[in-house]
Image (cartoon, rainbow over all chains, first blue to last red; front, side, top):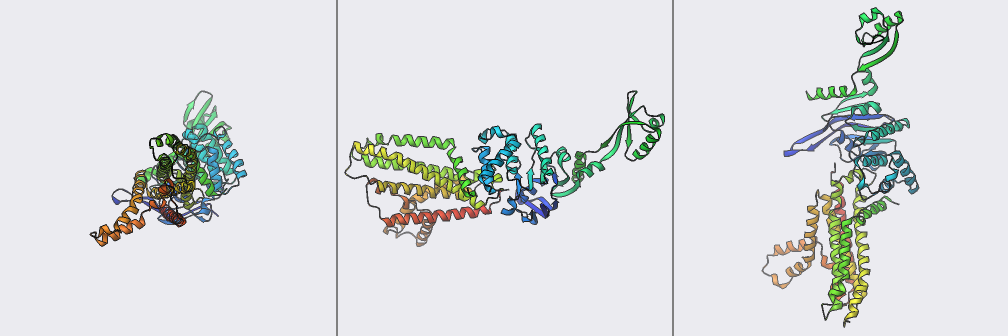
Length: 303
Length: 267
């Protein structure tokens, strides 16, 4: 069973002067078990609306959403995932431990388990020393980490996170990326939205691009990266005259020469190099990155 | 512990850790401590004035708390996006609303009892300084205090209802103040329009006034101050009627609050 099944959902909001603003149009998406799927999109693309529908905060105008077989918004569905809202806000009179107690009780965890899991997630998110301090004194990054901690508390199989890296410093971002990969290793499924293509590149199996409320692309991240290879940068020690003549050198320090080989020319280059017994030290792909892929889709849709 | 109990606990912590409430409670305690001194200005009715002042002070505190806590409850959670965190957990909105009310009601009950206990020695001191012809019927004082607590719970329920549909502080705050004022006067207005003095009034107007009277809370039903101050007997039927009326009215208001909040789109 797919953890998330979104079928043809649409959602519109009331705008100024009675106009309807179409936030989502016929969005269909499946999230497979054990994968990390990142949703990319510019501001107002419909990412947060999608997550609000998934978590049952708002109903879609049409279409259906299932979370592990249960209708989105139902108690069964809400018991099945760990949710991190965008810029989370918690009762600031409470301490992290008290808030985690509320979360644990909501998931019908026993008091002992809440305590042990609270210790675990507070340690994981580096919040142990602040666990008994009221949240009102917390920085944005600390609140974000508590948001992640409460999403992890009941150890669900599915995580729905809205901008999980938002407000985090580089250490925090690295921590969260590591956490995501660890969860994936344990077979958990993660669905998250982000603006940052580098985050998708670092952790995602697949990426969905939403622009103007429509799904514009749904691709395997590794395929995008492979398809984006335009050529190769090759470092070679004292290349033969024939090789140097056929491939333009981008850098030459007298010993090591750096050549650019186009994607199409690579087989010919390798053949020639092996016949000539060339000393190849490095072959590195030069590719369009995910950001370029994303920007191409956005600009195509804005035309 | 059940989800409901934990939510009540969280809401109670939020109430008890609010420094503004500490300040208001402190001011009321100081006011109560002044009761014997202020009562002594009345040469003939020191005991009666002491009882009246103590009960009025507690009643005023409970009223302020009920309005502040009720009117700042749900809309503030929505505005500060606490609902996004809490209502995406497996908690029903019904549990959420009822736990909010339960926490406020427990707070009102607890502080009402606490202030009531505090006022016992103060009334005793005042009464001992200038003994009155009338005895102090402590049972009547308890009934009067319970009436005030019940009244404040009803006002809190109304404020909560307004808060469940509102997007700002204004409607629940001013709405509950207006409802309190109307509820305090409704019995007198009803007695006026059903009396002999209104023969000139159009029958339709009387019907409308009676209908509004039925809809508005009748806060006079919880007022036992006169019986407490002057040691008058309180029929059991009257107490039973107040309890029944208060319970039914609060239940209806809470059902309405739950229904409206369940329909509210929070996204």
